[in-house]
Length: 488
Ligand SMILES: [Zn+2]
Image (cartoon, rainbow, N blue to C red; front, side, top):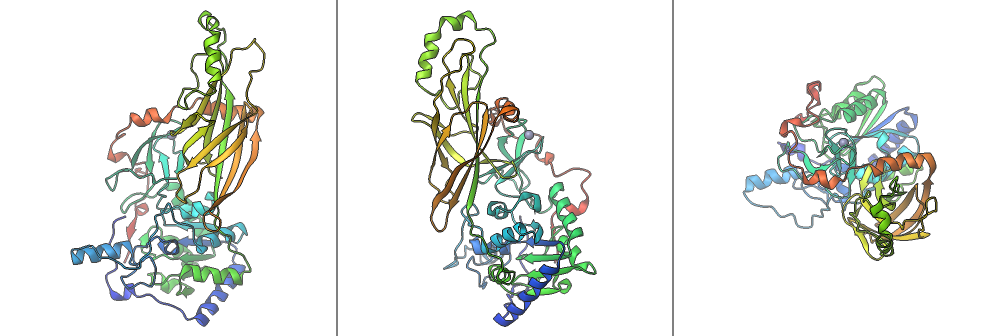
């Protein structure tokens, strides 16, 4: 986003409640939370400074370890005509950032049934990564790890930054949709761009229902996002609670203003609610799909004459990872490894997958093909009882490769759960086969997989699709107030 920094010293001033005042205010907040029927949380960049990600508007003299806000620093550097060093400042990239106590407290509040909905202006994706369910979340300004199909609207979460476009208002990523082949676009929303219809609809719907809105670390200056807490604050029986170091334009509407850092306030709040803040664990879901391609309906004379050749290629165990699943040489066993989020969103989790000693795949879909010997009609093909898969993650948290011994079970979809603790052990702490579906349900899923276009083909044919004016958010029906702007 491009915007202006604060204009006055008063706007930069950070306010801190003393310990007794903080305790009294948080006790009041806990009581309101217990009484509320629909609690909404609204987060801004301030919740992620504890993770090492700088905000936008903190001043040069901020108490935060992330230093001046991005816009403040840029304005100061422009004024000085040189780069400004900030000694002692600690910054972490969004992919390496570990969700804070504040993020994890929200996960627990939602899990406990207390928090009903969360609206965030942050694009760092940390709420999703923390495990907050997407059904109760609106990422109003997008997510750096999420891209969306411009045709069928399918979403893909990646363990890398999706944005590749250079122009501020350009969003093509150069990748193609695995479902329909359409061009994928990053989901980042810049000033003057339309907000995603679905996210804004969910956010405003939550504002209508909420009787309590807890704002965490937002300057409340960017609209229409800031209209969401404002709606709750203006209700006769609505309560707006603002936790922020700097003052905000909605402070006058707030039933309670808490001057403290998000992590301090949320840790105190959770202890008053007698709830534990869960530690962050990176959760990964991996789907391993296995199927056998149908043999040719009637073996051609050519195939019948060459059984030896097929037999030999079987002994070499696996064909190249990129071999098409439908090579014209009789039945083949196919194994595909895919990442998936809890809500079913496809996720790119591994930069490489290896099967056995020889086969490797560094391009999605990670698909391996094993040519089967031609057998007497009706006889079951010989397959190993299990195979060894090595999954090599992108390693944003330095997570090491995972080795899985996968039972071979054609016509099935297995879901494996992997959990990694980036902080205390630095190890994978859970690797287990959680579910296997077979039968009609599996066949339905596998039919879709087997028919997928290879995304690489569409990617290579990419370039700009429809030019800069075809952004999916820019629909004629979208109301004016849904573009992002700033209020002072
Ligand atoms: Zn699509």
